[in-house]
Amino acid sequence: MKINVLGATGGLGSRVVDALLDRGVSPENLIACSRSPDRIQRFKHLGIDIRRADYNAPETLSGALQGTDVLMLIPSASDVEPRIVQHSNILDAARCAGVKRVVLVSSSAARTDSKFLIAPYLVYAESRLRTSGLGWTILRNGIYLDPLVDWAPALAAMGRLPYPVSRGRVAYVSRDDLARACAAACALDRHADQVYELTGLRALSMPDLASALTHATGQTIRFDEVTEEEFAEICRADRVPESDIAILTSLYRAADHGEFEHVSDDIRLLTGSPPVPAQDYLRESLRRYRASGRR
Image 1 (tube, helix red, strand yellow):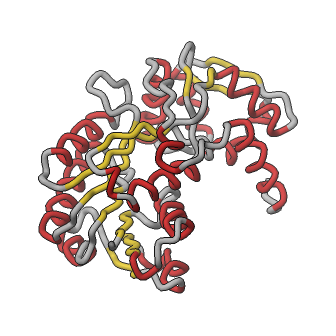
Image 2: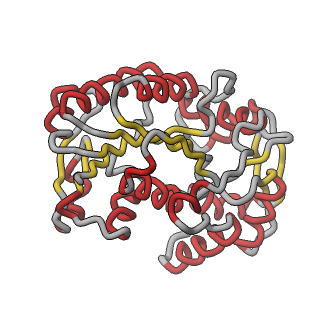
């Protein structure tokens, strides 16, 4: 069985390829696709088939998907309308190439009443896949935990966690744990025609998250509820693009709406082991972060 990972240069996609190898999938049975194949040459050295696939260029997709049995579809970071077109391009190419099953990375915010700006794409993507005639598996991911490792030194220096969240709780989950679940969903056909919710072990309030960061960094970090306008100004000071600010703000608005508080056991169900607790993940990741000499 040939497994093809679209978006293999990304923070999740590259981990999925590694997780498939860790599961014992032979490199000869893997295809790794990217718009920039030169960025994943390490996989080529392992014997993995490297191909170019541009979501915006349908002519690249037909060749990229040839010989694929299971397609791991990781969406781009484009805006909603371009993502919809890209999704259609990929599914059309998958059907023409004879792909048997598509494993789609979605989100807990895939709901019609979501406050998250990307939700209209997510709802469309899931529905389009389920009516495509292809086999399918849908993985609804929670909010990534690992970006907090990069932000932790700055948060520790400020001594505060400034988020526009009042009551919301988030079942944060690391991309490492998500990648293990994605690999399992790809490798085993019994996960066909299933929807899985991939979350952390516990839904954390923002004070809970600040406490976890305090223990991980050794510096006191207190949660500081800010308005959406104040949060946007903080992002601008960090030179975050305006379009990204709007998406981030809507993500936390969705979190306050309770869209990421659901806790599921599906990662353990898929992989045989639960996700790493948030505090443990942050502590160990920051230990490695410091050991690498990063500040």
